[in-house]
Length: 204
Image 1 (spheres, rainbow, N blue to C red):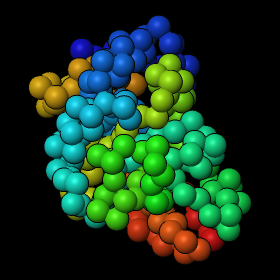
Image 2 (image 1 turned 180 degrees about the horizontal axis):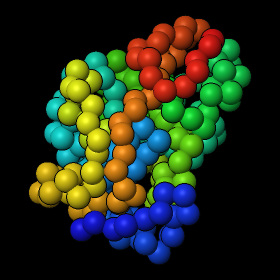
Image 3 (image 1 turned 45 degrees about the horizontal axis):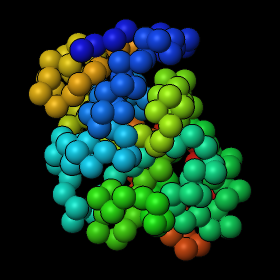
């Protein structure tokens, strides 16, 4: 099922099929500030397993799974954020950044990487915020881009719906999007490590 939504003025009613699918533990495709992504509710073990399969990431991978949260309070709830990094994170978010932090006990273990880390995002995107608000919990997320070494291509919602028809219940269509990855920052202890340079003007 594909639903058409205005990215600038999203209508909650039009997003309802995607919210209903998420509440059932299903996977959706939806738009973010870095391109289209797979999403499921954080509480859905079935959805987490499906996204791991779609992304080719098992639980021994060094890459953590990432969730979208509503703001700084949730960043601190699901990730261990040192006081030395709080001011930096407050300056960067919301925005196109993924923070890799030590996971707290509130993060399902099935989301951890082998180092017990998790990725956290607070995108500056109305559809993302509305989905989280209507769902009432964080949204596990993973870009639809096949791999970092692949040449990026314009993402069309109809094509994505057809390609992932077996795994995705609802596709939220806001028109063609060009994938533009986030900057990934690993913050463990007092260190900040840039794992990937992407969007955003990061200065420590």
